[in-house]
Amino acid sequence: METVDSEQTSVPASGGRTPKDMALSLGVLLIPVLLLVLGYRLFYGWDTAVTVDPANAIASAGRASFAPLPMAAPDGWQTVTAKWEPGVLRIGYLDPDNNGARLVQSRTALDALVKDELDGKAQADGETVVGSVTWQRFRAPDGQTALARSAGNTTTLLIGQGADLTGLAAAIAR
Image (cartoon, rainbow, N blue to C red; front, side, top):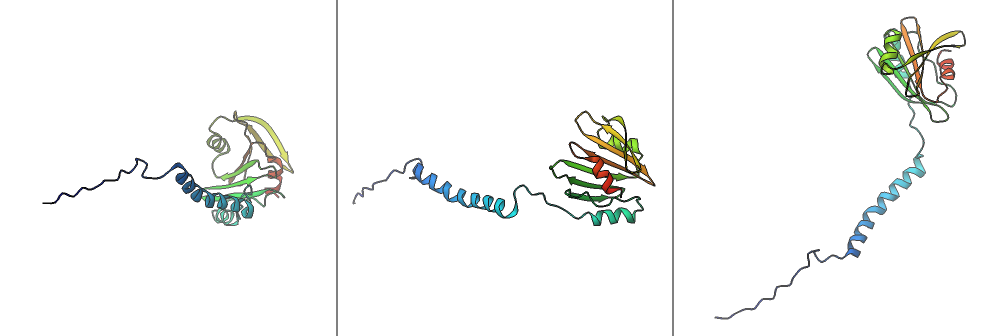
């Protein structure tokens, strides 16, 4: 009977990989990700908002007999969201300074719509006349301002913080 001595080679706990190998592996993974992010920023405009055409949402509101319907946003403003839910038209805007504003139209009574959209915390703050239309002004504790009016069978509410709501009201009510 022969005895065979076998030598077992011990493998280090790290599996034979050094910190340098791990750094190279991470570099191989991170470089393509960084290139993708930088390419996106360069070619697609990192800070550019994605705009939408609100025509379909406005047409849906028209088919539901909403009147008056909003017209186009003021020059320099961007429409970033437009959604028709049964009974409610919502359009989101960005002004030239990237301040957000939203339009909400509904058949809900003016006071109830203001309460729903501003969490019941808005206080009446007088009136604003835009063109020949009188809008009621509301202020919320969080700094948001709202302009609201009822016309025909529709209540229109404009909400924003830092955005020129009177300019928006003038444009959409043309």
